[in-house]
Length: 171
Image (cartoon, rainbow, N blue to C red; front, side, top):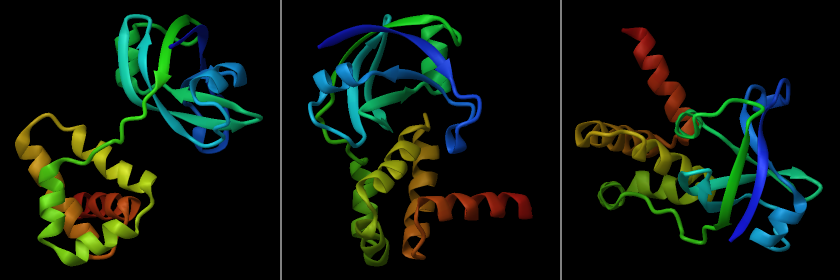
């Protein structure tokens, strides 16, 4: 486990990361977490007393990484930009899994499964996150159906999201 303190930062203007709140993970810390890694990887542990798992560290060049702090994490920390956080992190080697029910649905729909299998690991992760963000079984079932239908049409995650947004604006 690596223990360090870091200030909460926010990108003013940084391309697609504009407005992101994040922690900077220096090269020395990243090397202790997963030596020699230049690509994104996941960590678990705590930020102050707030527990995290499966959180991605994103490479920023030169060996340093960032950890984006989403709204849920910021709310759990109860801290704003400029505040310091004590991080206790380890590499989270556990493979992120998709819900078994979703995999059953994909297995029943060969075209959807074929499209899903063409996706990169990170793009499959978008589906996993999207399916896990809802709280009710009804909402999860609806999202699984939407995902399987989109995949059967040959869509990836971003194409599905755009199509769903378009459907909402048509009504």
